[in-house]
Image 1 (cartoon, rainbow, N blue to C red):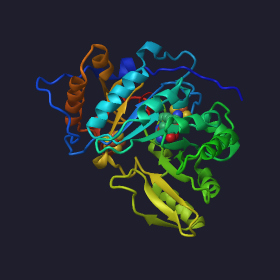
Image 2 (cartoon, helix red, strand yellow; image 1 turned 90 degrees about the horizontal axis):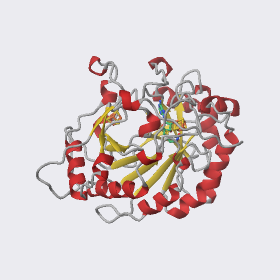
Image 3 (cartoon, rainbow, N blue to C red; image 1 turned 90 degrees about the vertical axis):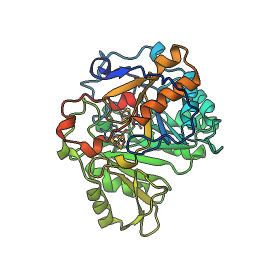
Image 4 (spheres, rainbow, N blue to C red; image 1 turned 60 degrees about the horizontal axis):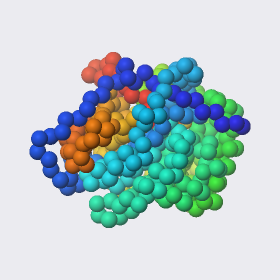
Length: 371
Ligand code: SAM
Ligand code: SF4
Ligand code: SF4
């Protein structure tokens, strides 16, 4: 099928505020020990490298909203690779050890391998290689898997919402065949990627009948399948609690067919809860952002395509780092601005979901901020 790239932007400029962070008067060298108002450190940075996508997943970029008239970012508004790398280095000095490239569809960003090369050589504060990963819809993986590996990408997550071709085509809403994504995953294995993860967003009466077929398909493959609760990100997906399939239900369903046992997290604060098949055929995970909020351990910052720092997936305001870069601020000034922003952070949207204090607040779109 031919590749269709649909440029987009949401109405974020009108709905979502942003401001240029203040540079504190007294500049301190970063010590890697930043803490926000709830004592959470900064370990994980998600960088959105494009606001475009060739899919129109109904829960993320519904066609009716992200149509051909949608305004999109001008190229000059995007952070360039030097700017992204410069900010990544500053974040690393504050304790970041893991960087995930996302979008939109990150493989649509021209020469993304070049950016990966630039990031892959960075070391954490303790001198270890950075954990550099990327989340993709898999549509371009057959073409790109080897170059991503060669560029130094450590790991890969592929989003896939069903194994039935008809259902998958409905979910991506651009009639993209499931066989091509599965072939992309195969290409990633051939290129030498290990521990590939597949993420499936589960939406009731939409793709929940795919839970068992997906589990069945990925057992014994070495791929870890993770089920994500449908979230109320952004303002365009018409979220409704009744469309959420709680993770506990997903696990119960699988356990009835393929018995499971709960296993320890890989590290404290891991977002996915892990389960292993009793017969040794692999593991699955569940990410329960709605039914079991994990805000108390949330150590993620997000950097949008145009260089705004967001402190939460559900943020209502961005902090414009691109403005600081382009007005010629020094690394130390930008570092202190980031520290100041993080140290004031109080976000815990998932814990407050549905409470009056969040009512009518605009939220940034997932395709802009990155998942
Ligand atoms: N295009 C890439 C992809 O689909 O993997 C990367 C960006 S996408 C925004 C990142 C992840 O967010 C995907 O796994 C997607 O399924 C997930 N996502 C998007 N909207 C969501 C929603 N409303 N609820 C839960 N997950 C969502
Ligand atoms: Fe595109 Fe990923 Fe959003 Fe689907 S989830 S529309 S592939 S950005
Ligand atoms: Fe982190 Fe915000 Fe998600 Fe809570 S809702 S886990 S603070 S991104």
